Image (cartoon, rainbow, N blue to C red; front, top):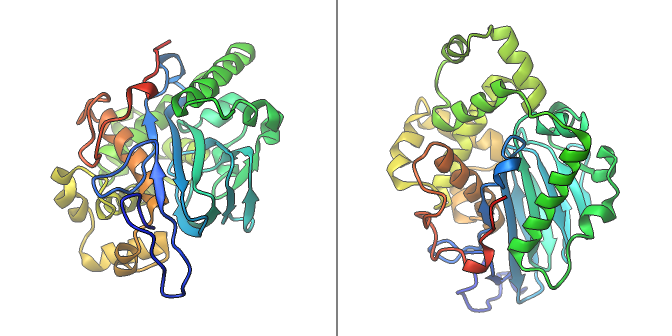
Length: 334
């Protein structure tokens, strides 16, 4: 993917590649990022992150990318055409709000018209707490909001052309705040939140140690994690190792952790095998064809991870960012 600093060029096949101008941040080498931040304080029991990305394509070219989530999302995508790979087959999306499940592996994505998407990242088990939907039923799938009993227009209609990116996020949070007040939804399972933090801190820690620390049996840990992540505890830890390493390759990781990310694997063969199993491509192919949309997704994860581990301040300029977010995106705390 070409970034906003590069001139129009033709690919080997003669067609233009996308060239993006991002309103919501860039990496040091110009790859578009999202504005992503901690949710409003009163929504933190249910939400892990709020994100919005505005990146305009000057060429109108068809783009390909990769999608991978280690959390479930509510996403609104407007003004662009998406075709997303899912466990149920390719899904076409335009001007729609939907629930995205966690991923057991990466999935292909095609899009035209740039990137204009806003989303709320749910904590593990939050979708069950809010709408009675288990994360296990959404793994590698995307479902319309009607599954939760919400008409699409109620959420997609929150966007209009006069909104700044940060205002769009505020509108989504206000909607969820009203839903929680009306439904009386309880916060999700504390054990799941602790397990997510453990995956961020050290995905190589023995599961028995974690279970003993939380004073639960391995059977209880297996049951709760499978329900609230849709994966087994071992699968969650394997995914965390791979995504941290992928963030390093995409330039959106703390350089001080680079050696640690590599040493989490037994050896090079183990690292290659795990990476190929998740992304479906070799390391060389991944690094030579670094995809902007994947970088955007991995940056959201790393920003949240480092903030939760108290390694960076939420208000700081992240190590991989070119500039801080514009003041217009700042949100008034509730």
